[in-house]
Length: 364
Image (cartoon, rainbow, N blue to C red; front, side, top):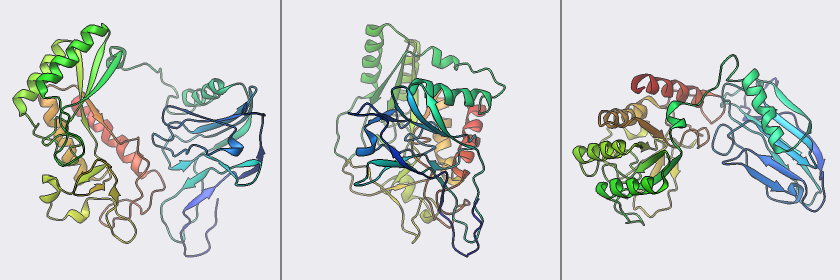
């Protein structure tokens, strides 16, 4: 705990702080295992650039890291079921033969407020490999974490889907890409691919939006019209292929109809401390900017929820809400938003859990 006796805000708390972590093995036999994206292995970590760990996000999918060699080493974890923003990272030290473990607990911007860590931290010796480290974390999840007193079982739709294929119908005009699959080609191509593979099949269907991928505010009606969209959905489902409706609510396009129609656009985007909109670097050549948005803001949620309502009415049974939790907690200073300034705390995942629960209750 930090007793803040001043008027400034504490941005983060590093605890425990461990220095002098020297190499456990020689010639790259030691490695740091980080649950970032699909999993990262950093060999010889005391001398190499290490992967980041940002929880909760796609760059921190679980709350542990392990530094191992010859089935021994260090296991470090947070036992947090609320989704507080944190970084569980080992850091290499320039020109030094060791690392430091610096788990950073991020807190909201609250000048003069005391700071504490509201969840247990684990740090200790580990016997085993990276898989037993994963099992150690899983045992906590099942015994004390989210799955305590529950019987885990996969969703029925998940057990029926062996492969998911991503296909993009259109790109919004003005970008660097112009390859397109009209809706009838989506039907024929995905169906033929599923027939060839002969296994349970689904498709992540992008670019059906009003002007094509990435939507970014203009999702409905579909580019080829509602009737053609519905026909594509029905055709795929008849072939036992489940299409998912893709929407990413973490950015809005300044050239979108939605943005241009806002009477008070300042209320929508994520802003930096000086009030400027935080840009989203899409990197695919559009003339106007993309701005970062918080998927948890009520005004924005209402807009993209209406798109999910429409695709549900057209027969779609699977939604894909991209960008959450892939992206980290927004670093937002918009005074029009009803959340704490900065990116710390748990406000964002708490709101998104509530939203996803309501979305599931509404659409089944």
